[in-house]
Amino acid sequence: RDWLVSRQRYWGCPIPVVHCPNDGIVAVPEDQLPVLAPDDVELLPAGESPLKAHEGFRWTTCPVCGGPAERESDTMDTFVDSSWYFLRFCDPWSDGEAFSHQAVERWMPVDQYIGGIEHAILHLMYARFYTKALADVGVAPTELREPFRRLFTQGMIRMDGTKMSKSKGNMVAPSKYFDTVGADALRLYHLFVGPPAEDVDWTDQTDEVIDGCYRFLQRVWRLATGEGPAPGADPAVVDRAAHRLVAKVSEDYERWSYNTSVAAFMEFTNLMYKEGATDFAVDTMLLLMAPMTPHLSAELWERRRGGDIHAQPWPEADPHLVAAESVTMVVQVNGKKRDLIEVAPGIDADEAERLALASPRVQEQLAGGAPKRVIVRPPKLVNIVL
Image (tube, rainbow, N blue to C red):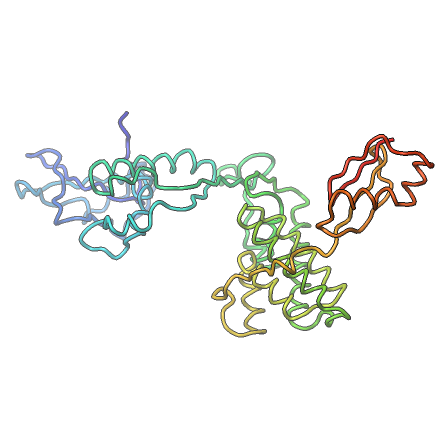
């Protein structure tokens, strides 16, 4: 079907044609492109493009006959230019062409596309159409058929169960939070409130959650500026936990599970207040939090280490320190929990069964008898069936 791309508004690319009384609709010659919109238009509620009221833009000469002609005042739908910007990004300083095949072959396709459901329906479709069309006419490499490798559709913050909209007046201005708790606390709330693919309602309790994020960042500030607890009797406990934090957060980031990362930061902060903070542990947490709270992390890193935290390499976890020294094995009798036993992570089934049957609480249930069956799932579970 035909695609109507003209819009009666100022923003958008001017359509490069003129209307001549003698020659009709005439395309602007290539050596006169691009047609640039003036920056001194008057925006009035006239129901038509403001370009039509700009005399300097409106009137020109016909490229064919040289007589007076009128420029097209409609502009292109913004999807026209936003549907291929990623190709221009591959070669942004090229003057002789939109982009070179070599640059596009190097950088495309885009690894990750992120957008709301409206983007996934509209812009994604237009971008795919443009990529295929440009490849078909030879402007883009012919083998480029899909512009994006992966799609992630993010959820929305809603008000009263509906999308926030200026026309409905159900908007929340973020500026007041910049003055009270700061942008990082508001950003942390958005990451903490739920999985990023799900919609979230802005409710009466939202401010309480935002304040909680702010209080958490205050605790981090005190730790990083030396106002928190000193290292405890066994700092290795906290440093081992820091390595486990690196492993967890790195994995969470890869699978878009930002809310569980924030929960892990809060849990780790509690650990440092309980067991004592170490420089390694604090520095590690700041590096991991930098993508979520860029301003706070940058300020604290500069005070502690100097330089830019966002130029630092991502921390790596020591696999030997990530491995748990022990895990809690649940012992059940007929499906009911009877005991908890700390065991080595690599315990085998025979040893797990032996420890479970030797438990005094299990012996009490057995009353000198033998179990009918023992189900062993090392190192987490042993279920004894009587």
